Length: 345
Picture 1 (cartoon, rainbow, N blue to C red):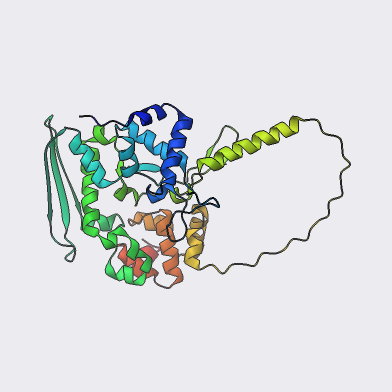
Picture 2: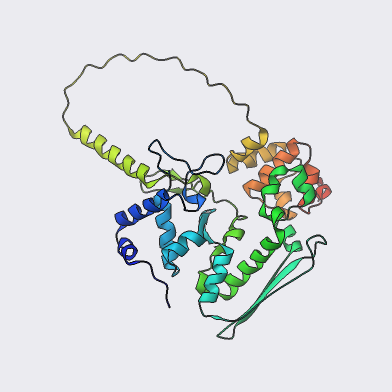
């Protein structure tokens, strides 16, 4: 039987103000996934002076709309769809469940072999559709290393932040999700609309594309964890602009201008920010500039030998160079350091 939303919700879906109000109700429940809230440094949802959760109702609506386009209920959309790296991604388990529920699967077989310790672990997923089309996809440890995803124990000891990576904490599962993502998009693109799994989207490069709005402003998308402005703030901004416009239309008596006294500028004390933290806040263009100035090899040589050019990798390389551990980090990426600095190569 086809899943449906409750009657009251079906009515709200045809009315944007009602849908935004419903989204705010969900936010105030405090039970939505963490990416719908503005959070503190400990990843706990923040509250305002009225002790109400600060969330992004517009993002909730966007997720609901995307899910509806994929034939998902509102509850399924909120539970399984995650906005990240400028795209909507779906949790791997949710994607697999949607494929099975589609009725398009004739056979589905998952196998694995090898071990993580020996470096030969791999997962293969083979499936046949009811229309007779067959496909099999495999993902291995070697493939993860070539893509710059693999985190060794030695690398995690030298760089503690890598211990938070799912590729360090649960590599078997991440390899499985890669194979699942490939088979899902290759054999069942009509079911998932070619969507990435959230476990894959974690490793997508950030989108720093800029474009011009109709008003002539240059707009650059921010990282998804920073895009959490609530719908309430947006409405308050619109209201403030309208009040200002009305005030300008009202006639006012002419007043003599008062002399403006210049206030001496106070210099703000410079913050002692650790090098790695500063790099993470640096724009991609500035990162590339700093790379050219400080590194003993060029970005072009790095990419030619198989390295990634995303902002995260550049940050790691610059930080390793600053700590005198560049050669070790390069080796962990599977690249010959001597070839990188060989100007004749």
